[in-house]
Amino acid sequence: MIAYVDCSSGVSGDKLLGALVDAGFDPGRLREALAALGLEQVVVETPARVSRGVSGTGVTVTETGAPRRHWAELRGLLEASAIDEPARSGALRALGLLAEAEARVHGVPADHVHFHEIGAADTIADILGVALALTALEITELVASPVALGDGTVTTEHGELPVPAPATALLLEGLSVTPGRPGDGELTTPTGAVLLRAFATGTGAMPPMTLRRVGTGCGTRDLGRPNVCRVLLGEPLVSATGHDGVVLLETNLDHLTPEELATAAERIRTAGALDAWQTSVVMKKGRAAVVLSALATEDAAPALAERVMAETGTLGVRMMPADRRLAERDVTEIDTSLGPVRFKVARLPDGTRRLRAEADDVARIADENGSAVDSVAREVEAEAARVTGVQPMRQPLPSETTNPSA
Image 1: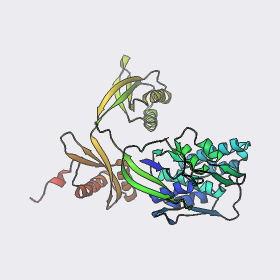
Image 2: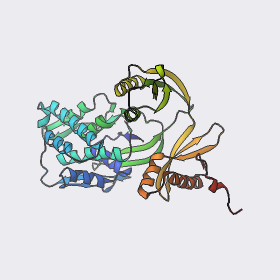
Image 3: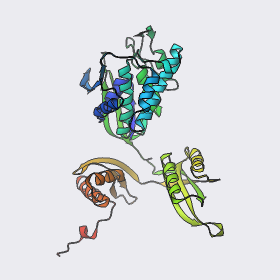
Image 4: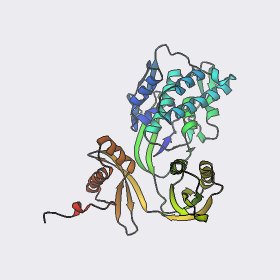
């Protein structure tokens, strides 16, 4: 899933988290994670809010006593927690970047940095909440628009500072930014800036995608225009031409066990391969072996070849440019009787359209219901066919196409 963050009115931790909640993230998961950290006293509320006629979700975080916490303390809490990956490591990375920026600004060691300027409870909740939301919403690519910084000055514990605040400016180095309007004040906070630094894959134009959901997070300050941050979620579009250049990576292996081969292939897939597979072959001297193959984009191929060598211990990888023909496709989500299921809908060369249920969704439903995967797939695909008029790619069983009593 692609997420595009509209930062034309700036970005703060509460507005970005509010947008993700508005897009479908359950804030109860954040409350559970805070409790797992021993921070049950941190109260997170997500009220409906309207900013200059635009409705969305707000986020308020409160904590009795508002204690100051140093980075070393927060790091210890997260490292010892049972919060699922990759949310835990993402929150650690973001808080670490924020601590380093504050340390550079104030000239102190990072482990001695505390987050009083922006509120310790706010910082923890916003950063942890966004990390959890990105995982829960299955967001693999996050792109931000050029970031509006604001105008004038902001009041901090250290006095009145120019906008952007020093830590904000450090965190946004290398990203696209724009000024605010006169009188805007601070539009992008250090927490908002570090969330983009830690999780954004780039800034610029919106990637081509099929739009699925829109979430709006509302701030509390009246700017004279909507004070919001929007998140647009969608599925990536396939190249309109249906062709793209790829690289085929191959290596012959006769020294790994089947278990080691399976692990290597899976790690290569998660490292960015478009696909990976194994083919049994016979090498010189009659040795049984396997050709491990992977498909990669042209940009990713060199790094992926190094990963293949690192994972398998092979002494060389063949790299062959190739061109692949892709069927036009889209991904749509349909509410079936067994729950929401994503379907790939492809247009074949003869112009006909066919659909197939996403394997991960089918497996999840089969596991939840104790049903066979094949029967679940056929049931949800039959429902989708009735809704869309698009026939499944899966061939029907004989019993589905014949009448035994006829």
